[in-house]
Length: 115
Image (cartoon, rainbow, N blue to C red; front, side):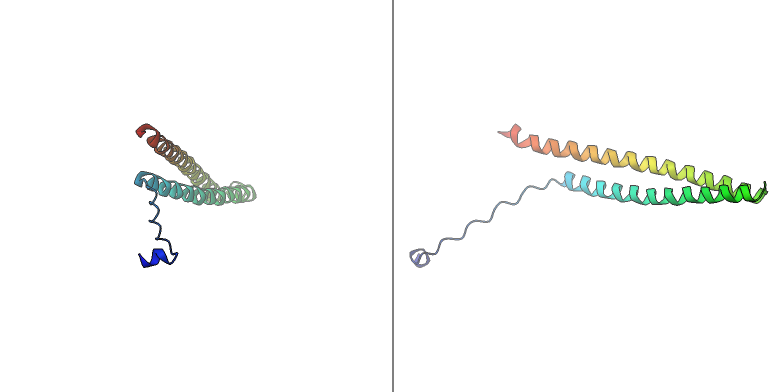
């Protein structure tokens, strides 16, 4: 009581911590991982395309050399597989974004349903 008489106010109670939905946290982490994966595969894809271009030039310069043709074939096959990885990574990224958006929308709707 002496503190109240001296003009000091009672401390405010701590603000309630926002409820963190573990599902949303997990989905955000998944989204970050998917974004990082897409960036890595895009870099890999750029390198693969450059490799194919170099192999094409080597094939032209070698006048049908079997080794140069084989290198070009392998480079093209590698580039195709990297493009497939990139497509899959982008699909996973979109799926993660969709799931996160759905979870956030569901969380926003929850308080309204309880009232």
